[in-house]
Image: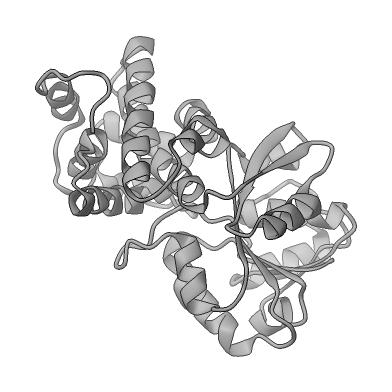
Length: 332
Protein backbone atom coordinates (compact mmCIF):
# COMPACT_ATOMS: atom_id res chain seq x y z
CA UNK A 1 0.00 0.00 0.00
CA UNK A 2 1.04 3.62 -0.56
CA UNK A 3 0.95 5.32 2.83
CA UNK A 4 1.51 8.89 3.97
CA UNK A 5 2.16 9.63 7.64
CA UNK A 6 1.57 13.23 8.73
CA UNK A 7 3.54 14.00 11.88
CA UNK A 8 7.02 12.73 12.72
CA UNK A 9 6.94 12.65 16.50
CA UNK A 10 7.91 9.43 18.22
CA UNK A 11 4.54 7.76 17.56
CA UNK A 12 4.18 8.83 13.94
CA UNK A 13 7.75 7.80 13.22
CA UNK A 14 7.32 4.45 14.94
CA UNK A 15 4.15 3.62 13.02
CA UNK A 16 5.77 4.70 9.76
CA UNK A 17 8.65 2.36 10.57
CA UNK A 18 6.25 -0.53 11.32
CA UNK A 19 4.46 0.02 8.00
CA UNK A 20 7.70 0.28 6.03
CA UNK A 21 8.86 -2.95 7.64
CA UNK A 22 5.61 -4.54 6.49
CA UNK A 23 6.45 -3.84 2.86
CA UNK A 24 4.35 -0.71 2.36
CA UNK A 25 5.66 2.36 0.56
CA UNK A 26 5.72 4.99 3.29
CA UNK A 27 6.37 8.74 3.14
CA UNK A 28 6.63 10.58 6.46
CA UNK A 29 5.94 14.31 6.67
CA UNK A 30 7.94 16.28 9.24
CA UNK A 31 7.84 19.99 9.97
CA UNK A 32 11.46 20.00 11.22
CA UNK A 33 14.17 20.02 8.49
CA UNK A 34 16.61 18.15 10.75
CA UNK A 35 14.12 15.29 11.10
CA UNK A 36 13.70 15.07 7.31
CA UNK A 37 17.45 15.06 6.67
CA UNK A 38 18.13 12.67 9.55
CA UNK A 39 15.67 10.07 8.27
CA UNK A 40 16.71 10.33 4.63
CA UNK A 41 20.47 10.48 5.20
CA UNK A 42 21.01 8.37 8.32
CA UNK A 43 17.72 6.48 8.84
CA UNK A 44 17.16 8.05 12.26
CA UNK A 45 14.81 10.67 13.71
CA UNK A 46 17.30 12.77 15.71
CA UNK A 47 14.69 14.74 17.68
CA UNK A 48 11.93 12.31 18.57
CA UNK A 49 13.35 8.80 18.18
CA UNK A 50 17.13 9.20 18.56
CA UNK A 51 19.46 6.22 18.49
CA UNK A 52 16.73 4.09 16.88
CA UNK A 53 17.64 2.99 13.37
CA UNK A 54 14.69 3.19 10.99
CA UNK A 55 13.80 0.98 8.06
CA UNK A 56 15.89 1.99 5.01
CA UNK A 57 12.79 2.10 2.77
CA UNK A 58 11.16 4.81 4.93
CA UNK A 59 11.48 8.25 3.36
CA UNK A 60 10.70 11.68 4.79
CA UNK A 61 9.71 15.01 3.30
CA UNK A 62 9.03 18.53 4.49
CA UNK A 63 6.55 19.08 1.66
CA UNK A 64 3.02 18.20 2.73
CA UNK A 65 1.74 17.66 -0.80
CA UNK A 66 4.50 15.14 -1.51
CA UNK A 67 3.54 13.18 1.60
CA UNK A 68 -0.22 13.02 1.06
CA UNK A 69 -1.02 13.09 -2.65
CA UNK A 70 -1.59 9.80 -4.41
CA UNK A 71 -1.63 7.80 -1.17
CA UNK A 72 -4.09 5.00 -0.47
CA UNK A 73 -3.90 5.46 3.29
CA UNK A 74 -3.13 8.58 5.28
CA UNK A 75 -2.09 8.41 8.96
CA UNK A 76 -2.60 11.62 10.97
CA UNK A 77 -0.14 11.67 13.89
CA UNK A 78 0.24 15.34 14.80
CA UNK A 79 -0.46 16.64 18.34
CA UNK A 80 -4.15 17.34 18.92
CA UNK A 81 -3.80 21.13 18.72
CA UNK A 82 -2.22 20.82 15.26
CA UNK A 83 -4.68 18.37 13.68
CA UNK A 84 -7.12 20.98 12.37
CA UNK A 85 -4.59 23.44 10.86
CA UNK A 86 -2.44 20.68 9.36
CA UNK A 87 -5.32 18.70 7.87
CA UNK A 88 -6.90 21.90 6.55
CA UNK A 89 -3.68 22.35 4.61
CA UNK A 90 -3.79 18.67 3.60
CA UNK A 91 -7.24 19.25 2.08
CA UNK A 92 -5.82 22.14 0.05
CA UNK A 93 -2.91 20.20 -1.46
CA UNK A 94 -4.36 16.67 -1.65
CA UNK A 95 -4.40 15.20 -5.15
CA UNK A 96 -5.73 11.88 -6.37
CA UNK A 97 -8.45 9.54 -5.05
CA UNK A 98 -9.58 10.04 -1.42
CA UNK A 99 -7.33 8.02 0.90
CA UNK A 100 -8.52 6.07 3.93
CA UNK A 101 -7.77 8.23 7.00
CA UNK A 102 -6.28 6.82 10.19
CA UNK A 103 -6.18 9.02 13.29
CA UNK A 104 -3.58 8.03 15.90
CA UNK A 105 -3.72 11.28 17.91
CA UNK A 106 -5.15 11.07 21.44
CA UNK A 107 -6.82 14.25 22.60
CA UNK A 108 -9.73 16.68 22.35
CA UNK A 109 -9.80 19.96 20.46
CA UNK A 110 -9.85 22.81 22.95
CA UNK A 111 -12.23 25.29 21.34
CA UNK A 112 -14.81 22.88 19.95
CA UNK A 113 -14.33 19.91 22.33
CA UNK A 114 -14.38 17.71 19.22
CA UNK A 115 -12.60 14.39 19.04
CA UNK A 116 -9.92 13.98 16.39
CA UNK A 117 -12.26 11.93 14.18
CA UNK A 118 -14.78 14.77 14.29
CA UNK A 119 -12.04 17.22 13.29
CA UNK A 120 -11.03 15.01 10.36
CA UNK A 121 -14.63 14.68 9.19
CA UNK A 122 -14.78 18.49 9.17
CA UNK A 123 -11.47 19.20 7.43
CA UNK A 124 -11.41 16.20 5.06
CA UNK A 125 -15.10 15.45 4.46
CA UNK A 126 -16.35 12.47 2.52
CA UNK A 127 -13.58 10.12 3.61
CA UNK A 128 -13.61 7.08 5.86
CA UNK A 129 -11.92 7.69 9.23
CA UNK A 130 -10.48 4.95 11.42
CA UNK A 131 -9.20 5.63 14.94
CA UNK A 132 -6.21 3.57 16.09
CA UNK A 133 -5.71 3.59 19.85
CA UNK A 134 -4.64 1.46 22.80
CA UNK A 135 -1.76 0.80 25.20
CA UNK A 136 1.28 1.44 23.04
CA UNK A 137 4.46 3.24 24.07
CA UNK A 138 6.34 4.14 20.88
CA UNK A 139 9.70 2.89 22.14
CA UNK A 140 8.31 -0.54 22.99
CA UNK A 141 6.54 -0.84 19.63
CA UNK A 142 9.80 0.13 17.91
CA UNK A 143 11.64 -2.62 19.82
CA UNK A 144 9.08 -5.21 18.75
CA UNK A 145 7.49 -5.70 22.17
CA UNK A 146 4.12 -7.49 21.81
CA UNK A 147 1.46 -4.79 21.62
CA UNK A 148 -2.32 -4.88 21.15
CA UNK A 149 -4.42 -1.93 19.97
CA UNK A 150 -7.88 -1.35 18.52
CA UNK A 151 -8.98 0.13 15.18
CA UNK A 152 -12.42 1.75 15.41
CA UNK A 153 -14.66 2.88 12.61
CA UNK A 154 -18.39 3.15 12.04
CA UNK A 155 -17.69 1.24 8.81
CA UNK A 156 -16.54 -2.27 9.75
CA UNK A 157 -14.80 -2.79 6.39
CA UNK A 158 -12.61 0.28 6.97
CA UNK A 159 -11.58 -0.95 10.42
CA UNK A 160 -10.78 -4.36 8.92
CA UNK A 161 -8.67 -2.74 6.20
CA UNK A 162 -6.61 -0.88 8.82
CA UNK A 163 -6.34 -4.06 10.88
CA UNK A 164 -4.85 -5.83 7.87
CA UNK A 165 -2.40 -3.04 7.06
CA UNK A 166 -1.02 -2.57 10.58
CA UNK A 167 -1.03 -6.10 12.00
CA UNK A 168 2.37 -7.77 12.38
CA UNK A 169 3.69 -10.62 14.51
CA UNK A 170 4.31 -8.14 17.34
CA UNK A 171 1.55 -5.58 16.70
CA UNK A 172 -1.94 -7.06 17.05
CA UNK A 173 -4.94 -4.98 15.98
CA UNK A 174 -8.52 -5.63 17.09
CA UNK A 175 -11.54 -3.88 15.53
CA UNK A 176 -14.44 -1.92 17.00
CA UNK A 177 -17.36 0.18 15.81
CA UNK A 178 -17.35 2.37 18.94
CA UNK A 179 -15.39 5.35 17.63
CA UNK A 180 -16.57 7.67 20.43
CA UNK A 181 -15.58 5.23 23.19
CA UNK A 182 -12.18 4.45 21.70
CA UNK A 183 -11.34 8.13 21.23
CA UNK A 184 -12.54 9.19 24.67
CA UNK A 185 -10.69 6.33 26.34
CA UNK A 186 -7.45 7.32 24.65
CA UNK A 187 -7.95 10.97 25.58
CA UNK A 188 -9.30 10.87 29.13
CA UNK A 189 -6.75 8.36 30.43
CA UNK A 190 -4.08 11.04 30.04
CA UNK A 191 -5.81 13.19 32.66
CA UNK A 192 -5.92 10.29 35.11
CA UNK A 193 -2.24 9.60 34.36
CA UNK A 194 -1.32 13.12 35.43
CA UNK A 195 -3.17 12.43 38.68
CA UNK A 196 -1.29 9.13 39.07
CA UNK A 197 2.01 10.94 38.68
CA UNK A 198 0.94 13.53 41.22
CA UNK A 199 0.31 10.76 43.75
CA UNK A 200 3.79 9.41 43.15
CA UNK A 201 5.29 12.87 43.41
CA UNK A 202 3.56 13.27 46.76
CA UNK A 203 5.18 10.04 47.94
CA UNK A 204 1.97 8.03 48.07
CA UNK A 205 1.83 4.27 47.63
CA UNK A 206 -0.17 1.50 46.01
CA UNK A 207 -3.48 1.89 47.85
CA UNK A 208 -4.14 5.40 46.53
CA UNK A 209 -2.96 4.42 43.04
CA UNK A 210 -5.36 1.47 42.91
CA UNK A 211 -8.21 3.70 44.07
CA UNK A 212 -7.32 6.33 41.50
CA UNK A 213 -7.21 3.89 38.58
CA UNK A 214 -10.51 2.31 39.56
CA UNK A 215 -12.38 5.56 40.16
CA UNK A 216 -10.67 7.14 37.16
CA UNK A 217 -11.96 4.36 34.93
CA UNK A 218 -15.45 4.87 36.35
CA UNK A 219 -15.19 8.59 35.63
CA UNK A 220 -14.08 7.98 32.05
CA UNK A 221 -16.91 5.51 31.51
CA UNK A 222 -19.59 7.84 32.91
CA UNK A 223 -18.62 10.62 30.54
CA UNK A 224 -18.22 8.26 27.60
CA UNK A 225 -21.67 6.73 28.04
CA UNK A 226 -23.21 10.20 28.34
CA UNK A 227 -21.65 11.04 24.97
CA UNK A 228 -22.91 7.88 23.28
CA UNK A 229 -20.09 5.39 23.85
CA UNK A 230 -20.47 1.73 24.76
CA UNK A 231 -19.51 1.18 28.42
CA UNK A 232 -17.80 -2.09 27.44
CA UNK A 233 -15.21 -0.18 25.41
CA UNK A 234 -13.75 1.25 28.62
CA UNK A 235 -13.03 -2.27 29.89
CA UNK A 236 -10.96 -2.90 26.76
CA UNK A 237 -7.68 -1.86 25.21
CA UNK A 238 -8.57 1.79 24.58
CA UNK A 239 -9.92 2.19 28.12
CA UNK A 240 -8.53 0.04 30.90
CA UNK A 241 -5.54 -1.11 28.86
CA UNK A 242 -4.30 2.35 27.98
CA UNK A 243 -5.17 3.66 31.45
CA UNK A 244 -3.01 1.05 33.19
CA UNK A 245 -0.10 1.66 30.81
CA UNK A 246 -0.17 5.43 31.03
CA UNK A 247 -0.66 5.59 34.80
CA UNK A 248 2.09 3.10 35.68
CA UNK A 249 4.65 3.11 32.85
CA UNK A 250 7.91 4.99 33.19
CA UNK A 251 7.69 6.11 29.54
CA UNK A 252 4.43 7.99 30.14
CA UNK A 253 4.79 11.72 29.50
CA UNK A 254 1.61 12.51 31.42
CA UNK A 255 2.63 10.48 34.47
CA UNK A 256 6.08 12.11 34.40
CA UNK A 257 4.49 15.55 34.29
CA UNK A 258 2.31 14.62 37.26
CA UNK A 259 5.32 13.47 39.28
CA UNK A 260 6.96 16.86 38.79
CA UNK A 261 3.75 18.65 39.80
CA UNK A 262 3.48 16.48 42.90
CA UNK A 263 7.05 17.38 43.80
CA UNK A 264 6.16 21.06 43.78
CA UNK A 265 6.86 22.34 40.28
CA UNK A 266 4.43 24.66 38.53
CA UNK A 267 3.01 23.63 35.17
CA UNK A 268 5.31 26.08 33.41
CA UNK A 269 8.35 24.67 35.19
CA UNK A 270 7.35 21.08 34.44
CA UNK A 271 6.83 21.80 30.73
CA UNK A 272 9.96 23.90 30.24
CA UNK A 273 12.36 22.51 27.68
CA UNK A 274 10.22 19.52 26.64
CA UNK A 275 9.88 18.78 22.92
CA UNK A 276 6.94 16.40 23.31
CA UNK A 277 3.37 17.14 24.35
CA UNK A 278 1.63 15.81 27.46
CA UNK A 279 -1.86 15.68 25.96
CA UNK A 280 -3.51 15.40 29.38
CA UNK A 281 -2.82 19.10 30.02
CA UNK A 282 -5.08 20.13 27.14
CA UNK A 283 -7.57 17.34 27.74
CA UNK A 284 -8.19 18.13 31.43
CA UNK A 285 -9.88 21.44 30.70
CA UNK A 286 -11.83 20.02 27.75
CA UNK A 287 -13.00 17.02 29.80
CA UNK A 288 -14.27 19.21 32.63
CA UNK A 289 -16.20 21.34 30.16
CA UNK A 290 -17.69 18.22 28.53
CA UNK A 291 -18.73 17.04 31.98
CA UNK A 292 -20.39 20.37 32.67
CA UNK A 293 -22.30 20.28 29.38
CA UNK A 294 -23.50 16.71 29.88
CA UNK A 295 -24.19 16.96 33.61
CA UNK A 296 -21.56 14.31 34.43
CA UNK A 297 -19.44 14.88 37.53
CA UNK A 298 -15.70 14.33 36.98
CA UNK A 299 -14.06 14.89 40.38
CA UNK A 300 -10.59 13.65 39.42
CA UNK A 301 -10.43 15.65 36.19
CA UNK A 302 -11.72 18.72 38.04
CA UNK A 303 -8.95 18.51 40.63
CA UNK A 304 -6.30 17.97 37.95
CA UNK A 305 -7.56 21.04 36.10
CA UNK A 306 -7.39 23.10 39.32
CA UNK A 307 -3.81 21.99 39.92
CA UNK A 308 -2.80 22.74 36.32
CA UNK A 309 -4.51 26.07 35.82
CA UNK A 310 -5.64 27.49 39.17
CA UNK A 311 -2.58 26.93 41.32
CA UNK A 312 -4.23 24.47 43.70
CA UNK A 313 -1.71 22.42 45.63
CA UNK A 314 -1.64 18.67 44.88
CA UNK A 315 -1.86 17.81 48.60
CA UNK A 316 -4.99 19.91 49.01
CA UNK A 317 -6.56 18.36 45.90
CA UNK A 318 -5.90 14.84 47.20
CA UNK A 319 -7.52 15.71 50.55
CA UNK A 320 -10.54 17.26 48.85
CA UNK A 321 -11.09 14.11 46.78
CA UNK A 322 -11.01 11.93 49.89
CA UNK A 323 -13.30 14.24 51.85
CA UNK A 324 -16.06 14.42 49.25
CA UNK A 325 -19.58 13.40 50.25
CA UNK A 326 -19.79 9.57 50.55
CA UNK A 327 -21.52 7.86 47.62
CA UNK A 328 -22.47 4.43 46.33
CA UNK A 329 -19.76 2.93 44.12
CA UNK A 330 -21.91 3.10 41.00
CA UNK A 331 -23.40 6.56 40.37
CA UNK A 332 -23.82 8.98 37.50
